[in-house]
Image 1 (cartoon, rainbow, N blue to C red):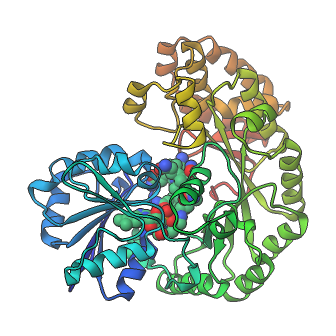
Image 2 (image 1 turned 180 degrees about the vertical axis):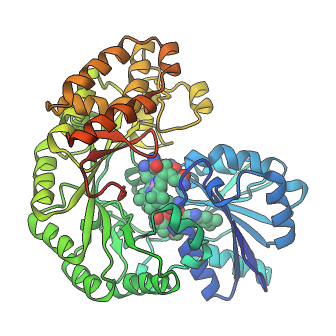
Image 3 (image 1 turned 90 degrees about the horizontal axis):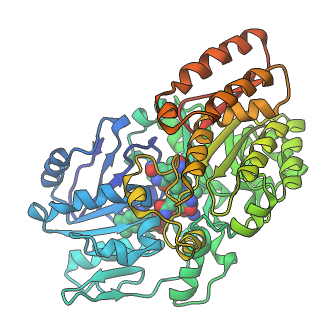
Length: 512
Ligand code: B12
């Protein structure tokens, strides 16, 4: 997808979203809004095969040359880093303007992003004010190398590392520019679900997530003292509702809203938000939440406002793994309480799980799958742990010499295969579980479906790596499931990709 028409100072964003389901990049949506408010011109190259724009370097070159941007702004997650490196390789043969990148990965490892050929600057942390200041400085020919949050590469190999400004007051921002994205193409792929975000930050410090190190970075580099209190912020209810209303009026095909905040319940004004949302939007919605923030009253407010499904980070059923490795103080008891509360309220549930953590044993993994079987969520998502740069768990992996860098580079899918140096037998076990986790859950359901899945598991457990690679899991899964579906027997079957399974029978099959 390529959108944009330029007049004055021209900023062309490039969003790397390759080999991944498309989604609105809230960071770019707000940066675009702020730039446009300041009379700059914004365009976007959204790299995503499903939207008809794959990693075609000559097409990208053609579009950049045609657009003649003054600034190229790249938004980057670590999972897309390799693409950015390849893109930058010959960028300087045809583009002489300024190239800046920002987003989760450049924030977590700015030196690494700056070491890439062709990148001039990196935005560390939030870019809402920094990018406008950069555009303005370039426009009037002012020095821009002292702009807070921006780090610059200078010719002697050194880096200018400017301090960070405090976290942005979100109420000073204009509504997000969601029209930057080709929603008419994105929405059908997302089941007509609009992704949006109420605020920023997270109160938890899970070791595999960037939030903890992100805040630490601010505490080290910010010109003022900042704490979790400043980090966790929501936009005013009216602003969020106006953003949604505007988008829905332009795209009436939207059927559902997905709030992608880390924890939808962490903001203080839930009651007010739910009441107004119901009155002014009224569309069904889904949200992420932490079992620690959930209680029955909050669940009731969500349900009454139209919430259909809550997405819960279960992550592990092993209390040891959660406590010692994930630094996640969420007990199985509080997960059960939340799940039961949701059931009572008629809220669907989607559980997020992770396997392949350092020191995790087979038994720990079975505890995770047993917990899912016991609570019977509508959707189960399971991913293999990947150590994101400079997170606490990445640092632990380094300390234990656990990362296999060759493997890390060669992974075609970073969250469905491990890149840790586990014994070969454990690696094969993880591979099998990543694909066949629904069969194990079905075994642990201890119902009429279990004996069949027990026999299937026995077969796959005895398979060598070669046999496993050749095994058509999806075909067998579908065949066996068809039989149980006919008989109405409760079980989980694989859905859409390697990391998702849905419960049958379920009314929430498509609300992942
Ligand atoms: C919403 C969200 C999503 C959404 C939207 C993703 C998107 N492209 O924004 C969806 C649901 C699609 C999603 C998907 C995934 N996500 Co996600 N997601 C988030 C979440 C919860 C919030 C991000 C957000 O919108 N923040 C609010 C906006 C305003 O902030 P921002 O994006 O950081 O942007 C600001 C700055 O970074 C900066 N900035 C950003 N880009 C640029 C560019 C320039 C030029 C400049 C100057 C500045 C700049 O300015 C912005 C405004 O201040 C974060 C958690 C977090 N704490 O960030 C994880 C997070 C970004 N996701 C993550 C991951 C791993 C994923 C998935 C891979 C998960 C999966 N297994 O499927 C997928 C991959 C998607 C892909 N395209 O490749 C990781 C990334 C880790 C990393 N180091 O790269 C995070 C950090 C969570 C974590 N594990 O720690 N995700």
